[in-house]
Image (tube, rainbow, N blue to C red; front, top):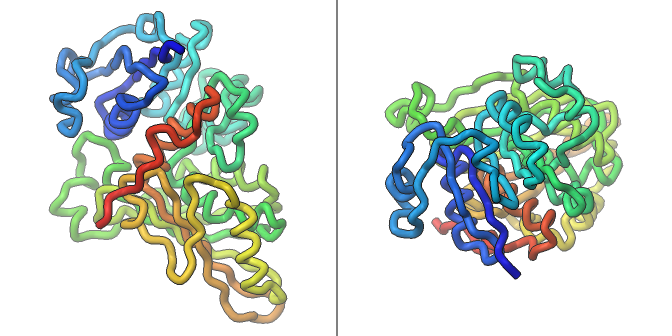
Length: 351
């Protein structure tokens, strides 16, 4: 069977580098074209040094309609707001789309405007579900029938997968309090004050506390999985590491809840999942997943206090892989009926 021809639109960022690192070795894909708004004419290895000598592709500047001409699938690795306009230009082309931005993840246009700061240019595309939410652990069957995929956000993936066992067990309700620390690569490839090494390497700082754009995405996912009457108070933290997210979520459950019940819920939720590890004897760690498409999840159970007791849900992943390009390729594999683990199965680096 002929390999699918793929175009990467927006290929000079860290997400674009991760997509190329894996798609260049995908047995069912030929990366035929890479477009960008900068570094035009340079080979991919001149921008992403780890890819030097692995491809003769150069970054091209062209209109979206040109970029998808003759392609089977388009991977979009551009910022939100920009992506929505590109999608409007290529939806009628017949090409499949895997979008890594936040522009088509939500179903509520009002929530999009509230958290992304602008009205969506095509609100009906949200309400009508033109794009399928691309988290395989919660949406695998729908992804298998999809043509357009909205790949989840990095914080949204980490936090939702940490809480998913409780939602599916009918044990997730009321307020959820989450603190999640993320690496500097999540801020993008262009240097800025918050990613400058002399400051980031010795610092912890919060940003967008209680107002991060992934909040409605997380709630949408958890409500769909069985959560009820949820409210999420989420504080993101910039951490002094290049890759990785570590999430800690606090939830109250009935005082009669046992550790054995929770162990069963976690095991049942992730049975057969190729990229989720339910850790035992320790808690999740970023170093165990950095560089790979794997997620580690776990929990701790507090003592009863009156009618409730506290469950603390932990989760860790690589923000550029399972939180970004890796999950996008995983969903693409499911959409096309390929082995879900193609180009993703190898572990991360240790240490």
